[in-house]
Length: 244
Image 1 (cartoon, rainbow, N blue to C red):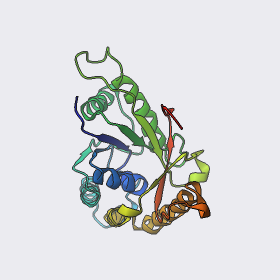
Image 2 (cartoon, rainbow, N blue to C red; image 1 turned 120 degrees about the horizontal axis):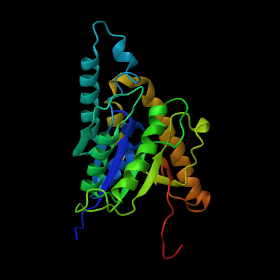
Image 3 (tube, one colour; image 1 turned 90 degrees about the vertical axis):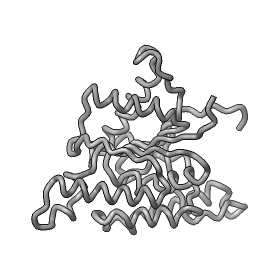
């Protein structure tokens, strides 16, 4: 049996994994995990306003720029495996064959855990569609009757990362991850996303606020860890433990 530790992040657009899970990715890469990031689209139509305002811009030019940004961010985070599916955005819609492509990736990676978006996002339906998709392909990857002979998936936890307008999404974090030791890597990755510079300080503030929540929930003034930066996640499936 392989002792390789792996994780899989399914990102609707090419920048989402940076804002919402960059710290978790960098931290687990440093711990010896092989993290695979799958970008379903480049966010070329709906999340590239700055690029579209430039004269002579085309769809292919936007995709190229977004890919370069994401690849640079991946390097900053230590990611060796980032995959661009180019399924298109606004709307993001996958057919049966595209879903099976994702199932093949999941079975190949055999992730210890998975990450994707919040379950509800009325401002960006691509995001909540991606999480519905993540749960669907996770289910298919567990089915012994799908492509018999392939190694089936176990039961990796699915963590939902923080949406942009948290209060509107019904997202309730029940896991806080201290990313202080890798914050410099996440900030460097954030600054690779030149097309969305308006979000740089926003997500820095989010990490600072989650650091405060980590301190509170790890003991507060009675001995909590002095986390400066953290990320919050909502676990979908129950945790199986032998003791609390």
